[in-house]
Image (cartoon, rainbow, N blue to C red):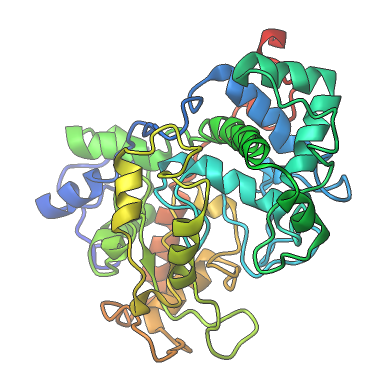
Length: 426
């Protein structure tokens, strides 16, 4: 026995890793974490277009679209930091209220942002542009910038067709957007002055920008990990493949599906149930939880003009649109946040919706004790109970989570292309 885990009775050579014994139930549960194909996105007809992905990658790394010309998608989603930013709270033009999540395997998600306020990757890509604390720009200025850059304009036109005729700034002012709750905002006034047909053209073009960025982000899929090689060995009975995880990480895998019951929320190929939970983690600034989370997100996604059922979706009668129609706002959604996936999790600390925990050890210790858990009078997840893990068990779980780390992404995905046009590929 090692730390309470039975070892295989088979003789072990000095060069081999001692193999932990797994029950048939544990094997079945672990095998549910096998990698899965990238899901389709019918709401984005350009989702798997190489030309769209190249244009989207160029836009992702381009900072010229922000108000100060210094902020881009890459600011909060840096390849060297696991496509996150290493900070507790995201920072664009100003500090925002939540942690910038990693984009690894983001296309496998069902809802986007911590509160799920968009239901597609392309709709998510649009919001930071017009958030005054992130990029602080507007859809009209974005389109003008594309139109004024010959290479960007050609890349856009080759893919989506011509932009609206933006030369007439009386019809298409340089700065205009809808502004929730402030009709007197100068950009809102300018937006109201655009005719309905022209507003639709602008929205259509703006949605195309999001669809191109989403096509790039769909390529951010982590490669196989030591855990995946271990799974192959677990399924086939090959001890050499199982030895891709050291004994401690194997013990962590056993805990993950056993005593720790992490798969209560972290299940499936990407170790997430794709849903929302209130785990009572104290806010970064202390005190009670004031962030409405999913409760606010449900209302936001249903009124989003770029949602799956809206006029800019390429599948407005499909499954995603149906899910939106059946989505209801309920009181127990207050303070719920989306379950993040765990593949490559060790690459992008800190953790939780406000980056409250700096290390995986801290995360596991919170679930072990639920110390300082915040109750806000709403419906916390009653299934969460203190795990009472030993230090050795916590170390094993951390080792297991580290085994979910994939090799670094290909270099060509981590930089701005020289040219946004697909025809310019070497």
